[in-house]
Amino acid sequence: MMVACDLALYRIVFATRAAEVLDGVTHPEGRFHHDGQRALYASPSPETAGIAIDIYLKPDDPDRVIVPLKLCNARLADLRDASTCADLAIDPHWPSVPWADERAAGQPATSWRASDAARAAGADGMIYASRRVPSRWHVVLFVWNDSAGATLAQNGIARPWAPQNR
Figure 1: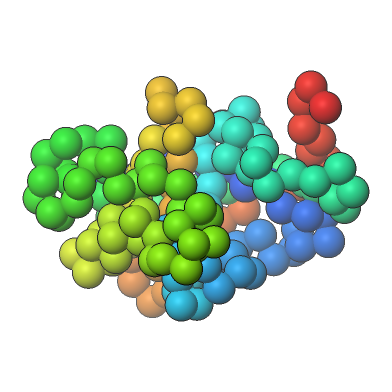
Figure 2: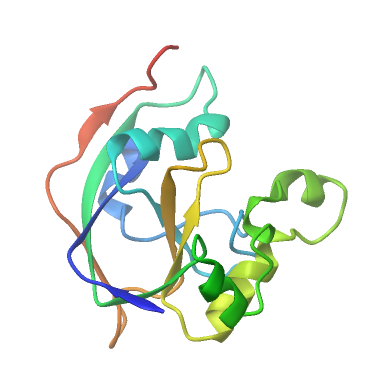
């Protein structure tokens, strides 16, 4: 497991939720969280943050903002690394299986196996490859801003964000 310090990240949220950008997800399940588990998804650049949310965008969505963040002291399982996956008994393909299709069919998401293994190993979060652009990556945090471990802070002002090419 690697320890990330001073890692710049970006998160795109609805403008009405800008003050809660560090609160994490509002939905009880997603790609790497289920049953109400705590999670916060972020990306290392504004471009990759846009890639991460592109499939969730709707034409009538409220305005969004992009918020720069800084992550320190995070124990991250890097699932792009085959040896990390082997150490955690994670099949490297699990993170890329489309979770929403499995949930729509009433099945548990295969991607949850990866995040559950990383959580069980004591990781504060994971680095994982983008499904749509595998050369890009994102971060999901499970633990942050508690008494020990990963700290996440806003690192600049929220700026208006709109999808490109729409």
